[in-house]
Length: 305
Image (tube, rainbow, N blue to C red; front, side, top):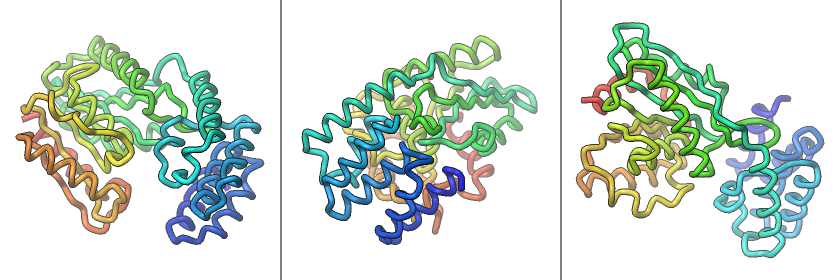
């Protein structure tokens, strides 16, 4: 079983609250996937009231060469019961040191040129955590190429675990990555600076929103965020300094675990005068809707209007 299949099995059992069976599956995978499996074991033990066992699992994962982005440890509600312990603080510090040593020098950049008359528009699409294969993820966005846009899919320089994947956790490194992306693409293509749109899914969607609102590391005309993980990041105060001309589109499933936080954030923006649209997709979980290609073109036209 590969890592994606294993993750799906553990998460499905977790969502059904079948914690004991999930523990059996996760523990059986520790030798093959020490970083991911040890983390799952720790989360499962923490929510089943075994804090010392949870801390032992994280220690074991580190001893086997694993590590995790600090945001995973600090923000995951499954670990609330162990977060105030000195052992947890030590695990977090050691994990962050190992994680930062594994940063790549620069993001990998995948560029998809327009397949019709160029419009000067640029869509920068940011993956979630841990992220799909670049070609798989790009497939959700390249429909914009048929409408004259350049689509860019960068792979973050920040690793998810030693076992693969990427994330956007360190804000300073994220800004550096995005600046490199923008500089490379604008220098090679006829991009209109007033037609730059930040897009993303899950964690990438949250980054698309926050960086667009900040106007850094470059100005955008708006964002398109699919299932943005606004619940895993502090967003207070992000609306106060942003220009109200910034347009945005949210696409979110009614069965998504971030549905309510996304609706609340959209409402807050609307109350403060932002021209944002919220597309709710019934019975959809944390994923792209099947008709996203059509939704993307509609969203792109709105943001670029």
